[in-house]
Image (cartoon, rainbow, N blue to C red; front, side, top):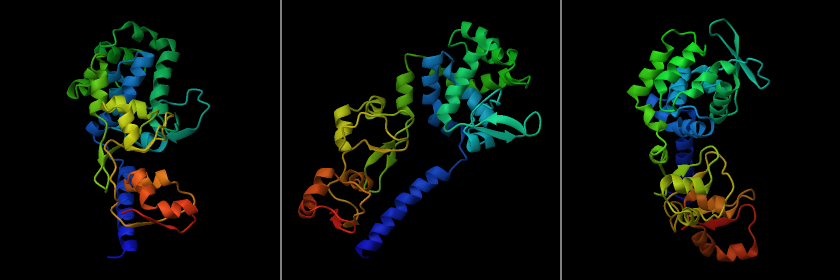
Length: 291
């Protein structure tokens, strides 16, 4: 097998992994909790709404993130327009062609849910309940008119108790819980990595996984302190000295660090292996050795 064929195979493998992750929308309840529990806890810290309630409402209203509103509009809580000035989507609900809010991301939906409950006076009494009293919160939401379903409180309580969501309301263990639910992937070059989530930095990921910040930065050849783009690959183990393929054809839109991250090869090794060509200056079509 020649080098070009090997490169294509590796690229196809990586693209297949990425495509399967992106295209999969049939989340299980467990996957939904894993994916969004950290957002619920962050909302609880800022807006004093039990994380268990936020998660249970998201699960119920969005059918584990699989409803049309969640998929097409990132609307996880079925919040209708009510004077909304942002983007909108129209779906049948109690009536035909009703107006619902459309968000750029699930984070916006979770935040707007918190703001929604804080904004309207009819929900004010809920905040008199203890943050661990999810049963009163569930019954109070129905009393305040959040949903028309008479069994809404019982449905929320059952979701919370069946999935032990109330553990996310305990401030003493929430950091540990969030750490356990971050997905860990395996790069084709046999290196473990995670993907950055909303508002992630190397610092938050390091704390999250109990890795020293300097180690994480070293693994990724970076001292970046700003917020990472969502979905950025962050290695949690040292990269390899060699790549799975021998040669990479350079494109002027690339950087050495992006090539290093893509193939899971240490930046120092990449530079050392291509010392002569780097001294001359890289040009489109130059061949970089990976092993």
